Amino acid sequence: MKLGNLIYSLILLLLLLSCSNPNLEKKVSKIQDKSLDLQMIDAYKEGLKELEINGDAIFAAKKFNEAEMLYPQSEWAPRSALMAAYSYYSQNYFDDSLFELQRFLKIYPKNENIDYAHYLLGVVYYENVIDEKKDIEPLLKSKEHFEFLLENYPETEFALDADLKLELINDLLASKEMYIAKFYMDSKKWIAALNRYKKVLEDYPDSIFVEESLHRIVEIYYIIGLEKESKKYASLLGYNYLSSAWYKESYRVFNQDYEIKSLKKTNKKENILKKKIKQLFD
Image (cartoon, rainbow, N blue to C red; front, side, top):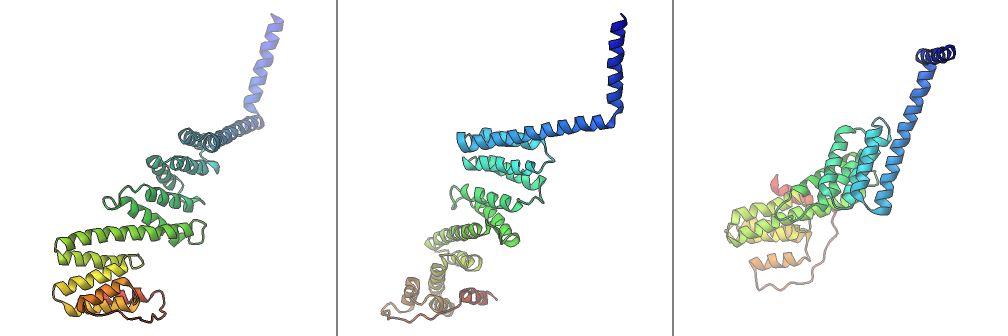
């Protein structure tokens, strides 16, 4: 009994000392933090392995989410959130990727990788377009994020690709206007068609459809009897695209017997078309 009492007393004393020793508490706390940190890194590495080696994007994303939740105060947490978004994107789970990216912007609005988040959002929306003639919402969302990136982070490694994709988006959006305008022309709704073609000039002056839009405007004005306006746009077309096939077609609107001669094209500054178009609407 005495030996048992002695052992009990020693255990009780150790417990009291551990509770009253702040250094011991601190040591235990550090061990726990380190263990949590290691768990997070292990989850992150497992996510990378699943994504890069096994190709299981869904499981990889879940491991990245797990890493983020294990230690949300860590610098690895926002990185894990982005990797989860990328994992979903890599195998075309666009809705899941969008959810993760939008969550990232909400939780980590000042993170150093915010430029990549906007870039990836733009890419996901861009690649999620099914039919630009029926649904342009993804294109508009994509354009919004690429423009934000170019305006706020023009020197980043993602800016160049964003700029190229933005040109393609503008061409697609312009093609939507051209499609509708052609429908109105076929229906002889001249004013509605005219407004659509002018919208291409105003909103997408760098698109590949500017020449044709100018020609169609020449045609419509001539059809409805506004020959002066028709000639004004024909002059604009000829001034900027003198050797264009669309300029040749526009000239035939006024004189179908005219034989096109070799014309010398002068050098112009790249922004001259924008200035000329802007003057028409001032």
